[in-house]
Image (cartoon, rainbow, N blue to C red):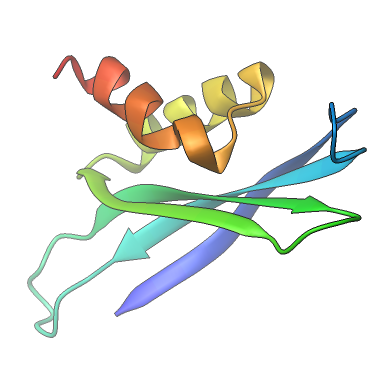
Length: 95
């Protein structure tokens, strides 16, 4: 089962597309059995006035909720968009 929980939002002045809203989500996934440990990931949705939303979901980053929330906080502070989310996660994980 997958649960997407809104972690926070950030409003930014966009360049060509005008203002944008970035919504950051904590993604929790569990298996079918009661014994399965949940894994955590992130989701980012970018919304502008003039275009369709951009989305990026990266599940299974960590088994630690605390570590994933720390990553989300850093991403929010930096205004990470869906386009750069995978690169940021790769850098964070040291890959």
